[in-house]
Length: 156
Image (cartoon, rainbow, N blue to C red; front, side, top):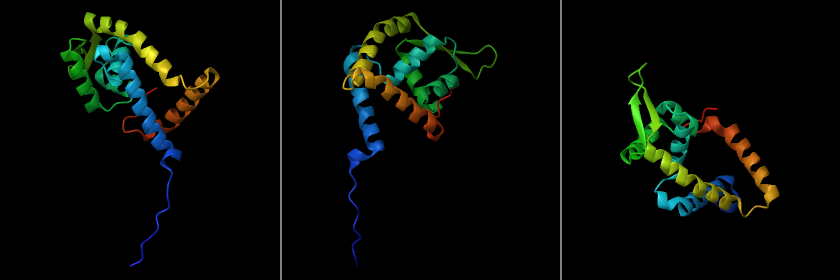
């Protein structure tokens, strides 16, 4: 039986591998800067989105930050158990859950944002200032063009 030769592939030259590594690094930096607050990047996105659109429903929130409905339910369970947000039935449709931040949620978000912004700066720090906007532009092109391929496409 003849062994087939598999062509060597340089993982570091593959965009998917590098994007996965960059995601790991981004999460690590986020947690280093915001660790005292005990919030994950996804929890931050949920809190910020609810702060920006009080009364948003769970399904719309999930679509706005690119999560599936089962994942967002677990995220919201954890935030609600910490007293950071409230879920209430919509007066128009009892199946729809409306979201609002509690006073503790607003306070946490206020304390968290400066640390989160510092994390964002650290993520881009290796790039020259002139390259940062171009990197973000190109990243947006890739995310937007491939959005529909996601398990949970983002609306908007």
